[in-house]
Length: 382
Image 1: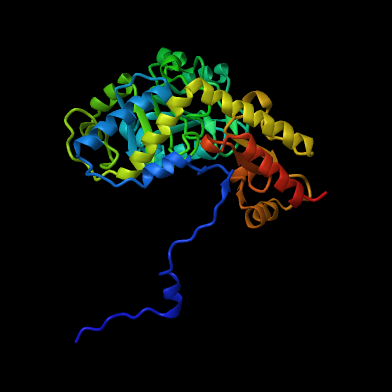
Image 2: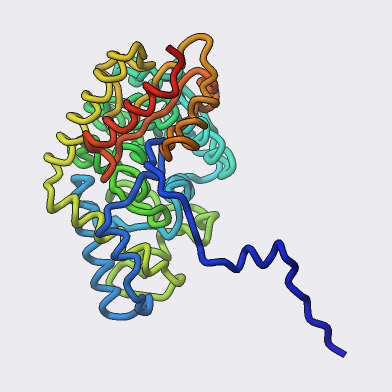
């Protein structure tokens, strides 16, 4: 006799229609998506090999090249969050024994160290206090000392709010026969990026920050120099799902089945990229800069200070020092519970020392700053 499992009273509550709070997401990500992006996600899906979807993939590739300012043929969206695209860069060009030099000045530099080590790299690091950046002399000295196959730098360190200057780094890497790998997770769409002019060979990002989309479809690009290293590997890429030898056949002219793509997330990404192109990339960068300067000035007006020097602050994410004697977690919880506003706390060395405030994508508006400031005036101690 077959027995069925009954639903108890607590489980019946889970059968109610979905109800979620309407938050203003001003943390390190995700950010609120543009209404047109949400509408695109609500569109009926087609098959992942449907000619209409394949045409949309081509549009995504073209738009990604625009927002990254690159002509790299191998420019795609990885079916996964930004961390998947991050791992894809490491997996495809790292072989056991390769010297990989990583600039660590925050949480995500350390994550690159962990990933590279798992692929058998001989990992070397250069370090800076969290919130500071590397200069060209320091990078040159490190390249001379370690002679790495790959140099990895975080352009926008999400844990600190610092922007790493990249002008001239690519030229140094070419001088030493090194590939330049760059994390643009918190910069793409909101911070000026010129991958080709800067000589960047590998880059990755995410969809839910400066592009104002939902997480799950993450930009990835490789220069011809990086593709050459991929093609000359002595061993297979150690990650099947992220192997660009396979993925490039799905995104390229062959259209070979690889996996079932998250159709609706790609709809959303295409729409988010279209909105950036419609606004104009330079205008988008200027909007982020204008609004974050308004945020900085407004925060200083109420007695708060920033963690990073103004010259190197990100226009997409600001680390705000928590005043002495203030319970940072309690303030963030009050903002959430009483005002439906999310801000982030510090990570790693900055845990308990800063709040992380994001102004990214659709949320980079004066109205967002005004709403946060009004709420802070109510929840902060006098």
